[in-house]
Length: 326
Image (cartoon, helix red, strand yellow):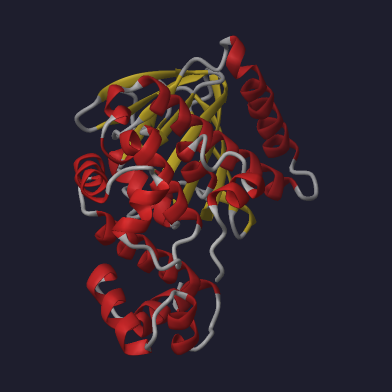
């Protein structure tokens, strides 16, 4: 793949050199999405089991409820609020603290499609309507970002002026989920993508923990530029010297600052990012491994396979088999 110079890159992707954090969030794509619309009447309680390698979110479209996670206590969610559970941790949704709880999968549900269900449950009292989803982020950017997120992110300020358009998004999502018009599932999926990204952005803007580590490095003018270039063009034959030049730093100063901010040496980061990009490509097509090795910048399949197994933990062939069984 020919390497574009920095000016050409900036013309093609103008946010690249000015907003590396936005560039990283741009990569996030949801997959394996499953939705449920819940019509609930008090008293009610749902026990949501832990779901490995998944993220869950709940949007309250009408009424109110509480979300309870071990170690974080109970948190009130009102109409228009959203709660994101980034690590797939088991939790409970209840009409009020202390309400009786039933395992989610023990309740009868109406299957609208392979990925969309309707749930009705409760004792006939005050009504609460939820849109809930289980999603996955498989891109390398997600592998960097998700471990940094807290156990639960609650967004309760959609009502502020800068979030007015999010209110419209929530209303549209609620209408699509309620009316189930043709194509509604696709619309809800796209809207959910926006909501999850916006929730993560809201957390990044407010939480001091988001100012350090990988996220802090993306905000650094020089290291952030280098990271964005690696993310956009992972197969380029990067060296520490080349990255330092792009960052307008000396080789030694760049190497030290990169390790300090990111938490690992630059070339180790490049290799790890490249191998996770390769993992995504393995899932997307069935091209011979030798072809993929060449596209990832390796002269031989053996060298690529060694690097892949060192980073991912299994061979490329085994990774492809796992992807094929999903």
